Image (cartoon, rainbow, N blue to C red; front, side, top):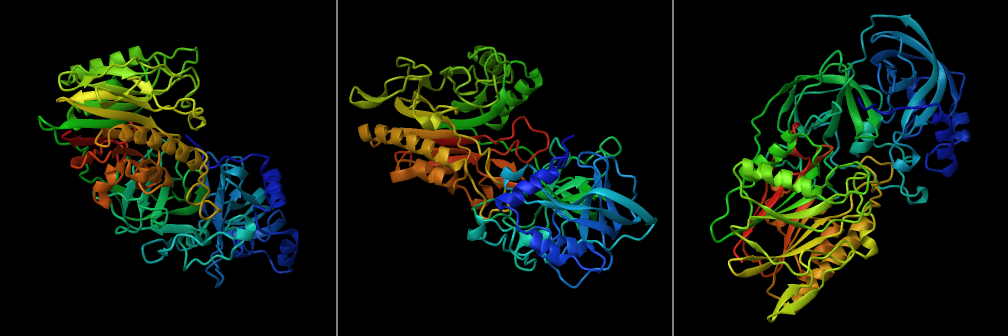
Length: 613
C-alpha cells in the first residue's frame, strides 16, 4: 500500500536546505537558547510554532509512553509525555522515525535519544507542513504495560471555525514561524495535537474509502452539509474545518480497512496518534477504529428528457481504453443508459487511444469508441454515433501514451451532426455564416489549438448539431489539471494554486470563441461543457462567463447540490455545463453516481442539461 510519508537518509539534507532557504522557521540561535540543564521534554521539542526550536539538535533520554507503532511505510512509533505542561500550543506527542520495524510496543515507557528534525512529506517544493520527529533513535524501554495518556477529543466544540491564520508576508506567506493559536484557528488546533493520542466520536463519512485504505470524516456534522451527506466546498474561504482523514495502524494483512461511502457513519470511538502526511494533511492513524454503519446512499438517476427537450451531458470516463476490462465498459454503458437516461448528445473526456498507455505512436480511438458504443447498445441504449479529432501523439497531456481526447456521442434518431470539413489536430475551427446563420468552418474541429494555453493539454472539441431544426453549438473541454497546487493544509496560507494560470488562459480562449459565435448570431444556442477542473466560484469560471457570454448552469442548483467530485472530504465542482444567453430555461442535474462511493466507474459525476432550443 502507499506509505504515509516515506522517509530516507536525505531527511537531514532536506531540513538543512529548508533552513537555508528560509522556508522553515527557527535558527541555531533559537535552538541553543532552548537547551538547558533540565531534561528535554516532548513539549520542549514541539515548541509553540510548527518548527521545533531544537530542529537539527541532538536530544537525550526524552521520556514518553508509546501510543502507536507503525510497521509499514514510514516506520516508527509515537510517544507522549503523560505529564503535560500548561501551554495548549505545545504538543505532548512526537513521532520517532526508526526506518526499520520498531521493537517497542504500545504502553511501553521509553527513553529516546536521537536528532530532532522536521520532515516535509512530499518534499520542500510541495508546500506541505513538516512533521516534527526524532530520527536515528536509540531507545531504552523502561517498563511495559503502562496506561496510555488520555486521548484528547477532537470534536465540533474543540475545532475552531476559522481555518488558518494569514501567512507572514515577510516569510513568503508561510505560517511556519507564527505562534500557534489553537483556540482560534483549526490548522493551529490540529498542529498543537501533532503526534498526540487523540480520539473522535461517531462521525459522518464525507470521503469514501479509497484504494489506499483511508477515508474522511467530519467532526462537524452541520458544516456546509451536502444534500446527500457530504461536505460542500463552496468557496476558497469554506475549507471545512471539521474534515479529518482516517487511516489505521494495523497492516491490511492483519486487519481489513472498512469500506465506507459518503453519508455512512463511523460509529463509536476512533483513537490513535495524530499524524500529518502529504496525501491529505492531518490524519488520525487509528489504533482503535470505530465501526462503519452503512447509510442508504444510492446512485442517482436523472429524469429522461421530454420529446421536445434536447439532453446534453458530459462525463469524464477516466482513461477508458480497449485494454480495460469489459466490466468497466459495461458499467459505464449502464450508467449512460440507466443513470443518464441516454442523453441525445454526450461529451466524453479521457477517451484514450486504441492501445491505452502503450506509447507507440497510436492516436486513433476507433476501437475504444466502437467497444463503448457497442456496450451502450447492449445495455439497451441508442446506437450512438461519434465524432472526434485525433490529437497529435504525446501533445495533449494525460497518461503517457494514452493520448486522451474529448469525443461527442450522439443519438442519430434524435439529433443530427452537421459535418463541415472535419478539422485535424492542428487546424483551428472558425466561425462563418451559412445561409445567414452562424456556422463552424470545421465541424468537428478544435478551438484555437495553436494557442500556448493548450500546450501539453487537451484542445477543445467543437461541433455543430441540429435538433428539431435548430442548430446547437457544443464545445467539449478538458482543462488543465490541478497538479502542482498546494493542499489546503499548506504552510503557505492561502495556499499557492499555480495551476490556475493555465486554466485562466484556456477559459479566456474558449470565451473568445463563444463571443465570435454570438457576434454572428446573438441568439445562438451554445453549450460549453466538460471537465473544467475548476470550481464554479473560480477565476476560471468567471473568465468563461466573461461579458455574459456564458452562464455556469450548476449555479442554478441549491448550494447543497453543487458538486461533481469529492477530494479529501470536500464535495466540489470540477465538471460543468455553461449556457449561452439564448438558453434561458433549462433543467440541470449533477448526477451523483461515482464521487461519493468507494466503488467507482470513474472519479467524476456526469452532468446533464435539458432544454428546448
